[in-house]
Length: 260
Image 1: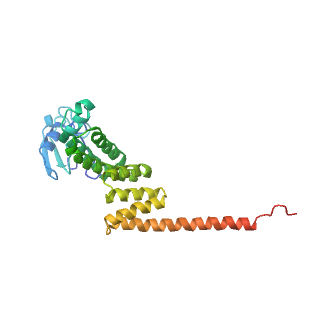
Image 2: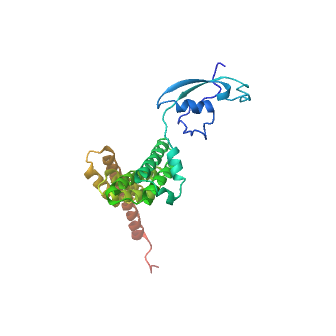
Image 3: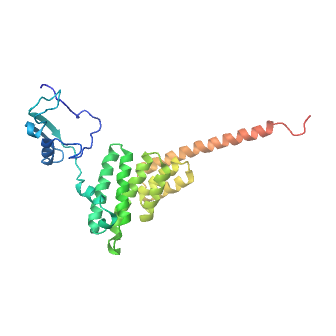
């Protein structure tokens, strides 16, 4: 055939596909497992490794050899994570802390991938899975800092994701949880400031953003958010003054009780 029988090369956002679930063609699965990240390869699949004796009517006749051109943009190994998350809490507790940290990191990586695709709800689900694993796991004092460091990253991700989902109250909640771990964390302070600004809690927003600026004085995003806050607050006070002026004007011009 002169043109491809199928293609997903022109999609704006590449789709995340799982081996054995979304990819069931034997040859394609074997081919992908042989590839490196970023590799472009061509595979010639005989019918046994492709569509077999039946083909895939009307485009692919029976017993047809097919040519696949595949580019492996990126991949994440979820087998270990999926198996671990399917276990009960009691079974998970039997594994060493490093295993839990590794699985939580994989879940967070999945969340980051989905976030970059603007799939914020799906990213939130992955981040929450990671956070649940970390919160449920107790660690000896000498290793607790490893758990806290992993939790901090997930909490910052959740705060940012809820901002994207336009849920500033939840964004503030997770930002404040991050600040419990690291009270000077500039990202956490910034996210909290953004959330408060969206909630029109201008004084709280200023407090958070000024603290963030103190940690990172030359951060472009923080300084821009402070400028935005000043503009929003100026508009807010102007509207308040206008409302008060109208209210007093009505009182001055209103009827006097007892007039005849």
